[in-house]
Length: 363
Image (cartoon, rainbow, N blue to C red):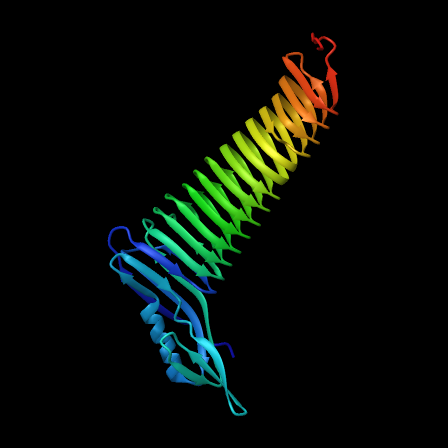
């Protein structure tokens, strides 16, 4: 027979803008807007067993620990979970549940499970989430700072008018719009529609944004995709980076790829990197080593001290200075408006397609 779903509630009044910490373990929680001046929690759960005293103890701890506060700082927690332990006496084996206060109760049949948690908060709040496993849906806009410290958690949010800080492992995040963001993530996913300035330090992660402010990024074996970004400072290894529209990019890369559809200025130092550009204004490469460049259209290109790299350019418009060793340069079309093509080095291969009407001089 199905066990009866039980409900327990707790609430506390707050003043002005509260600070709230959510500590959840292995459960699903929904955070919604409070209709009054109270922070409240509802927990749906099932419990059964042959020790009524232990069940009473669980429910007592739930009431006492769901919400605790010190002034205007509140902690919402499900740390009332008991621990299941087994002990042997001779040939007999006993099952107990043990609580944080050290007390333990014997069971031959025991079941306790939280099915759902509903948390009511004001929109004006400084929020911290310190949780493991499970999922949290934040269904209200937040006006305040948000700090997330998670492990193996799925979290969905809406709008944050305030700074967002994340320190996580094995977690997934999705937001609509946030202010400045500071990410320190490991094997996690972060998706956002729009954000302000963003600082990222990540490994083995996926980061996706439609629109972003200034990006400072350090990554290792990541996948990163931004559609619109003004400026970026990048240092990455074994990562795959994609930008639809970027103003200025500075990058130090090792063994990965970078794709940019439209870019005003790009300064790179790379080794073993696959580069793909659509339209680019100026590309400056320093100490490139065994890179591959595919460029649809470029105005200015400078490469200094390059080795073993190859360039395939569709349309060249302006000035080019290439200094390298054992490199290959292929240009399908040189515009009649170009000013300079200077190639210097050892063992270079150069192939140019010049317009018949173009006036030029070879030195």
